[in-house]
Length: 80
Image (cartoon, rainbow, N blue to C red; front, side, top):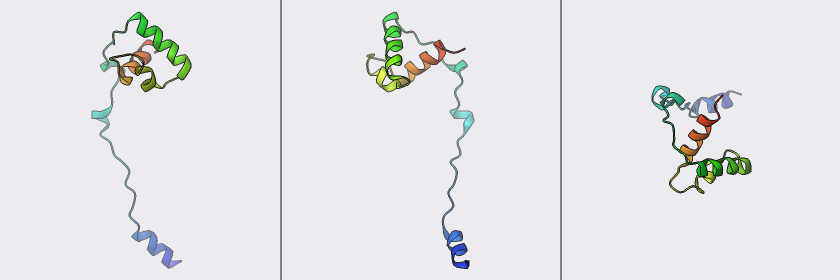
């Protein structure tokens, strides 16, 4: 039993990842309204019905749009 206790003491302790939440948190208040055309919005809605929240996949179908833009648009559009 003592050997096991010594082994446990010698093993490196896992350190929890600490994040500076003040610099990484982004609230929706800081998001700018993303201008999306009717065609883009229609495609986003249809793609979301098909593939769900796979923003990378949806953005791949809309030239010049990133997954982050599409997700933010969706969140702001469908916020309650």
